Amino acid sequence: SQTIHQWPATLVQPVGSPLSLECTVEGTSNPNLYWYRQAAGRGLQLLFYSVGIGQISSEVPQNLSASRPQDRQFILSSKKLLLSDSGFYLCAWGPDQDQYFGPGTRLLVL
Amino acid sequence: AQSVTQPDIHITVSEGASLELRCNYSYGATPYLFWYVQSPGQGLQLLLKYFSGDTLVQGIKGFEAEFKRSQSSFNLRKPSVHWSDAAEYFCAVGGGSNYKLTFGKGTLLTVNP
Image (cartoon, rainbow over all chains, first blue to last red; front, side, top):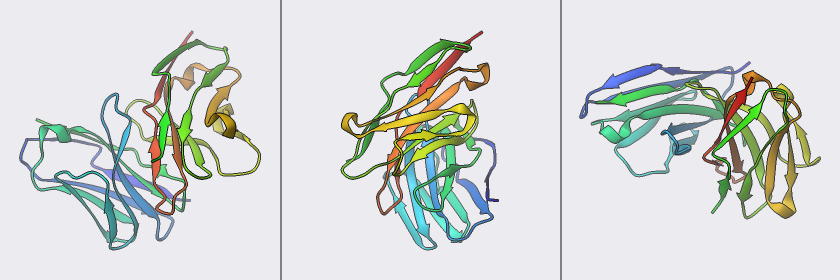
């Protein structure tokens, strides 16, 4: 069966520091991969999605970037964090229209 | 552009009572519709989905949803709510070739003993 992992689970970072969040999927190949951010009371905001290695689409212009160095690995990065980057970051994978979510990373920028 | 509206931000029901969570969507073609549930601090779990066929869809944990094209709705129902159903529920719509989903802002369900 397929499983999705995210780490770290929780992260506290100072403003201006770099960020790297990792997501990996096991038990499948060539999945669609997604990064979402969830802020309190604002639902889920799609940040990036990838339908294959080297294919990454950005939904919201901001200081975040995404990479897919391997088929089942999706990285969310930032060179300099802003206070507004605080939130709950969710990675998801999908074979087609379905999406299955990881446990999330809680990021607090101080 | 596709969109999802969940009109109820917060619903409170008593344990054992029936439940209906509303979802209205806007989509230019045949939609793929989903309901997810999220417990505090956790990821989202897929409850059920509708792609085609029977408009009444059964899901996990005793939930069901009915697709009504004429009303652009996909409401989630459960005949008898358990305390463990307290969570936030998200409706989502998709169907494009880019496999993107658009989520509603969620409905928080509180269950009273």
